Amino acid sequence: MAGIAGDRLRLHAFEPRSAANGPGVRAVVWVQGCTFACPGCFNPETHGRAAEGTAVDGLFDRIAALGDVEGVTVSGGEPLQQRGPVLALLRRIRTETALSSVVFTGYRWEEFERMPEAAALRECVDVLLAGRYERDRHLGAGLRGSGNKTVHLLSDRYTREDLEAVPRSEVIIRDGRITVTGIDPAVLGPAIFGSAAPDGRSFGGRRTP
Image (cartoon, rainbow, N blue to C red):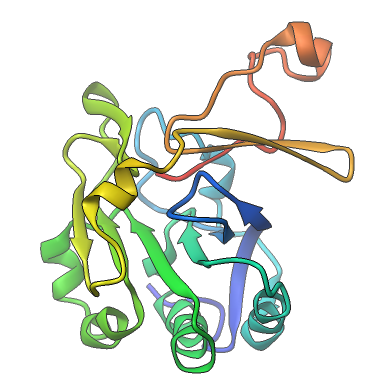
């Protein structure tokens, strides 16, 4: 499934500095749109496709200007349902920076390998986490949300031990907004948010699926 256009990405959110979405401190790109709708998904607000297209070049410039991050994580939503703009972004990251790239997808590895862009994506990605989220196999460790997900180290930049060392969750407070993120995000209840979060979850919750 293609994105809006090869140079524009349906973007749900951008976090400039996260420690719970891959090794080191990373920028995180959450894309908008996913047709899998896995039961128990922490990010149901990312499923709909309605979103204004964000220029890939502008997003890259924003990432490149950070200067103090180790890499970029692309999550969602479903990044590989916008393969054109995601690949364009990852290519610029790989060729123009020293940043690493981690990608989370709901597609299984066998499905990924059948994609026309698979070879090009492999050249631009250091770690690919593949497979649907399965609620009854919830794991929340080693960057895997559920035990069925597979880990593919596509370069020698990271080891499985590096992934296991990533914190399961974090709470980011920036500009008056609270974001709960990570592979096994904490649940912040009404005692903190009052009526703002009647379901016990904060606004801005984003899971690495």
